[in-house]
Image (cartoon, rainbow, N blue to C red; front, side, top):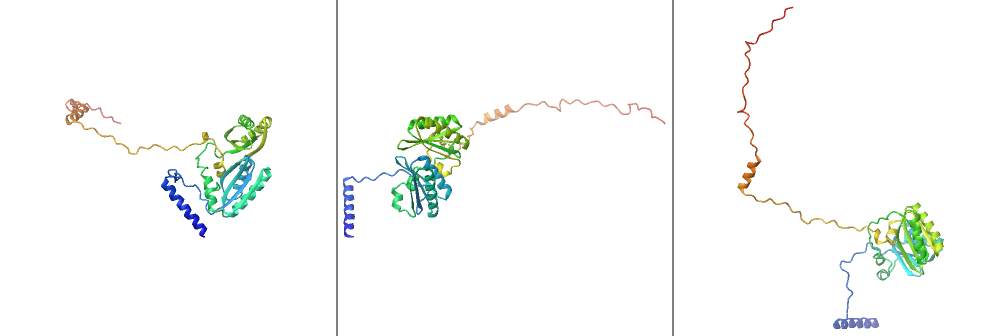
Length: 301
């Protein structure tokens, strides 16, 4: 205890000296920091690591559909290693991690897995395993490619990926959504479209990638969930930004101009049209006397 008190007192003295010398710089905070979209405090942590981006996306898709966990994002540590990070209650996290590990093993890309029932708050504050990682996955709004099937094709080498992407775009009605590079020469092209078009495009891209270089992995996800779409890379050209509508702060009413009284009378007089006097032009019509009109002879039967 005495040693700890000595260390704390030395730290306080050092901070006081730095303040006096003007060397104590506090990192400026961004104006109006955005609060995290989800609060992962007191939730279990689950992670599955693979050595392929299409494999980790397919693994994360199965984890989301197996239980009620939330996909925080992916942590790429280089050399092709990718980790899917999920949070939720301990039961759902255990199920999701087991399903994810089995899926990654079927792909032949499984590396490791981890479940922590109650991670320390210091981990959440420092490591990208919760809200800190979720900050990078901002709410991008609506995309023109939402609710479409996803196709991923991974090659070793950039030329093979570019050639495969060109072949996929020409083979079917699909759109290139983005590309991802995870190290160790692994490059992934991500396409979106209808399920049949995506499957046809992936097949054409596989042949082209094998012709140019090395094909590493492919993945087709027919119905991606919202969490999966939010964590996937997406080119900015596909994002529809919300533009505010410019509304007037106050509506100006048209003001009536004051006109002199004489001008008003003249204007009123000009508006009246002089009509003729119909009574003065009426002429009486002479009607015949009834006695002078001869009556027709009565007919006798």
